[in-house]
Image (tube, rainbow over all chains, first blue to last red; front, top):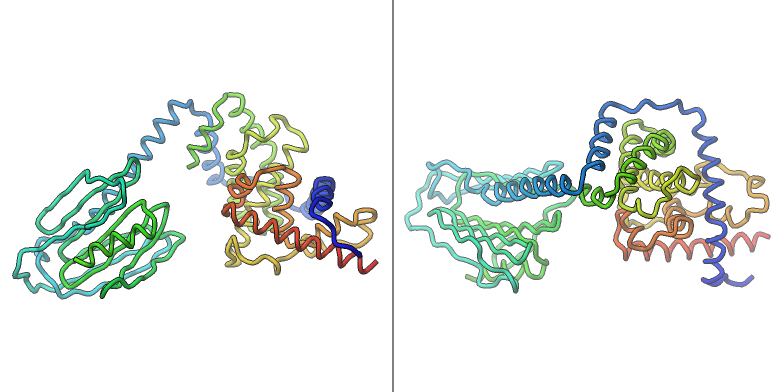
Length: 230
Length: 180
């Protein structure tokens, strides 16, 4: 007995794979002969109709629809990035807090609850001393309780957000993924990669931090380190 | 993402053909998906996913109803149904495949079916994911990149799985020869 070579195997596969598929088709036909003719559900028909409709659009219509989707995605990112702002004014300047993380099928909810102990000092905001090459500041906002800096590198975005701890909820799209932890300095950083984007968040006694970006993991760590070290 | 794939099919002819192909092959694709999944709702999902995957590589499809076109749609729905099956069993797309069911197991094939078809018998003794990837490569002639798109795995994993499939096939051939 000798071992078959790769070249011989290629020749055999090219010749016999179609024959094997033909045989498989026959076996499937025999197996499925008792399956009654299926009437597709309304839900299926609706979805396929939509797919075929999309299929029938002119290139200009397709581009317009794609633009609308892009605009909707940008709005969602904006809302997510600003979710720390959904707070009550009464909760401003508080520092004792607890975090409740709930994982759902499609997203993870991180709720921070604070008590009413007032802040004595004005918030001190920091900013990353490192951002990856090519990213430039396109927005720099300080609302008094939140500092948000948006960076852009061509089509890639990076958002840094630091907020005074308040009662609020952050929702991160974690569908099909899970949030991981890494320790940097004295902080436990939570991060997740989903749909081409990293989300990292952590807390200290006074602030919450959120970094969202289309960057590599190494770059993400460097950005976080540059904040934590401060 | 679907928009992007759809935009690839930008001639009226392609669009009409796609609808015709849907009407022609959806019932057959459903039967195959149902045979694998034994669940009506999941089978419909697999058919839909099969068509979406077909759109991606529609350029390579013959633009007429023929056995080759039929096989391409059938292969798409097999891949989609098999992915759903694996997910429901909690297996990862790139998990180790050696312990999977073979086609020979599924259809309880008998020796007399393979009279003069020894190599086909060996192919049917492969784990299903190995059979499917070899079929995509050697029957449909897809590239590594295209197979990666169809199976929703990385190109690197396509190469690894193909390598393992070929190794396993060689082992089966040797075992069969030893029996003779």
